Image 1 (cartoon, helix red, strand yellow):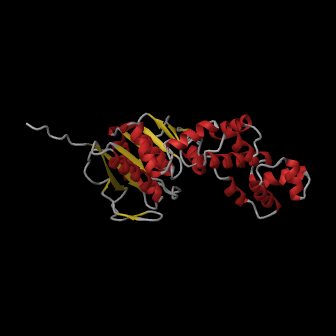
Image 2 (image 1 turned 90 degrees about the vertical axis):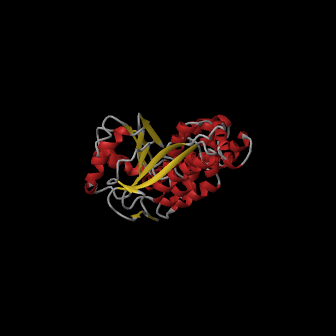
Image 3 (image 1 turned 135 degrees about the vertical axis):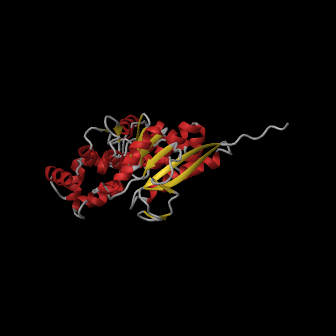
Length: 329
């Protein structure tokens, strides 16, 4: 008798989508699970279903209209993993009482449950965060801590696992979280293949507080400080001490430092170091340039100085950063 081919394992993933959800909170994790299914060569199937929190026939996100596969009022089909998508509209959460009751009843029976971005607020309303380590988008961290003081907030994390509960930071962090779930289910090798296909990190270094210094320079009000910021970004290999920057702005060092901090919320030295780290990151990602050359071009002066700056900002050395990126390229 011929051996029958065994059926692939099926894990049902449910993405709960509130009204006005961030589109990427939904389609980001969905793409990860779908790509994992494609790359597993029939060994495993993620069955991903979109669920509405009410009886809506169409779900309106910020950028897409989605047709839900199910709702909280459907039959109690088994769920392996539930992720609640985030939404910018978390000021009034009172309209979802039925969903909170559903969460309290169903979450304990799932292998895993969690959230993307501000989806964690829905878990909080259901009373599922007490004594649990969680994270969310850094801009909403203070509101989360104030609303659910019984939760243990880790505001700078990309994602946090606490038992069966998984929470992630803002928007794209849902992809990071989904990759972590794939790694748990199918192993690191397949998760790395998925990350490579999606051109993302399997595990990106550093916390969510990182942001582009080029973007940060746009936050100032178009005065001499902004001019100096842009000049510094274009001349990272030069002397960018406070005296040099103040002279460029035509101010005294004391006045320049005071105005710079008022405009940017950071000191000139902190801005310069972060800008140099960002520039070095880009060179490490996009070239095989020697570390000493990267250090010189970005104004660190030595590999040791660059290494210390990387550890402060990214929690990794330049060499570790490059290796992590090249794995996922």
